Amino acid sequence: MHNIKTNWALIAHGGAKDIAPDEELANREGLMEAIAAGSTLLEKGAHSIDVVEAVVKILEKNPAYNAGLYGSVTNEDGIIEMDASIMDGETLDIGAVAGIQDIEHPIMVARLLLREKAIFLVGDGAAKFAKEKGFSRILNHSPAKHNSPGCDTVGCVARDKYGALAVATSTGGLEGAKAGRVGDVPLPGCGFYADSKRGGVSASGDGESIARIMLASEFLYFVRDMHPDQAVERALTLLEKAPGEAGLIAIAPDGTIGWGHTSPNFAVGVASEGVKPSAYLKKSEEKL
Ligand code: ASP
Image (cartoon, rainbow, N blue to C red):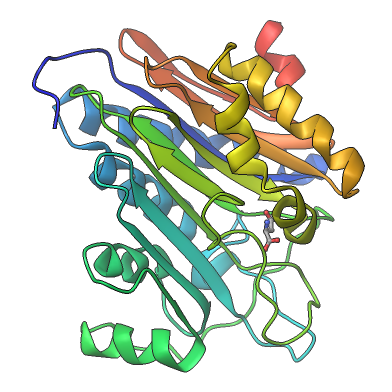
């Protein structure tokens, strides 16, 4: 852990997708609420690993986003199967779960796996681990209805005052997907990665395309030589090789924030030390 105090930085997303006009406000407000809570924690000196979990928990609870039990979409069998991941950029510890059902906050299960030997549990094994850790299954929930077509996921990258990066990502996957389908969200180097010395990044979009080009890993390669906004842009151009839509949020080791998307919208909230939280529904709004 670094001891020198530096600037904190925070970015979160609510999914790379097309946002229907009647869902714009909920998407914007949800991000503002989550980013404001995360900023308060970072300002008080909280560690980035705790902040990314807290921010994703707030987004999972919000039915506007396709994550957690109240906003997730259903698969071809009408069942909610959720994936989540978290990574500590100081230790490179990872906790990831996939195909988990009936759990309010999959990110909390992923977090409890963070310091275990195993980094990734699926289906029944993930459910068993959650039960052992005291999570109860919530059986009487009904699937959320979204008017916005396309993909969705929530994610957060934070850099704390001590220079440590962390990332957390959570999703209900793609609507009507094959039972047991898992996308990029729990795959390190594809849907997420954090290394305090290299950068932190979380993706959203077409998981199969993101995994084929290892989008998070490509971002880390580009960000060695350029601003994270440009590195995001360069990484996204690789989607030409595996067509699909995606968005990325990222923070460089020095705390510089970057993000971008090829989808029509990308709900994003940003804040950093001395700069108030802002929420955007597409990158072009940032320049207004
Ligand atoms: N990337 C997620 C997945 O493929 C979905 C999304 O981001 O909307 O499961």
